[in-house]
Length: 145
Image 1 (cartoon, one colour):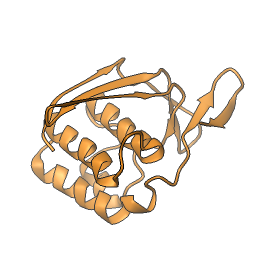
Image 2 (cartoon, one colour; image 1 turned 180 degrees about the horizontal axis):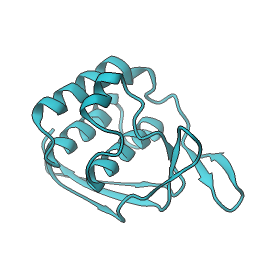
Image 3 (cartoon, one colour; image 1 turned 120 degrees about the vertical axis):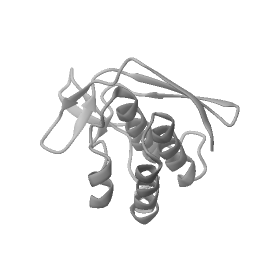
């Protein structure tokens, strides 16, 4: 996969839900052009994530928050795609959007290779198994979509 462009709006803003999880404060729209195809996803407001629950080796090379909003948006997209799988028949598609998106955003190739290896080792056990969970601020409760 070759990423040609990435855009997202607004900049992801996370709020703490509990000691381990965070939730997306506002709906996030992500647009990616890859291999000449246009992709758009909307991650719902309140989407709950830990922003990466991968193996320790991945945490060493790719900090949870990253160093910019694009990094955070890509991790949110990856977590969302693992739950939702909209129009994605394979786990490898979700992984490609993350790894190649990180490369497009300027992460060194060696870091992207470690992230890809970590996803191959540990990611398969979660793909398609989790429900989309959102935090409803008004009702102060977690809902499943």
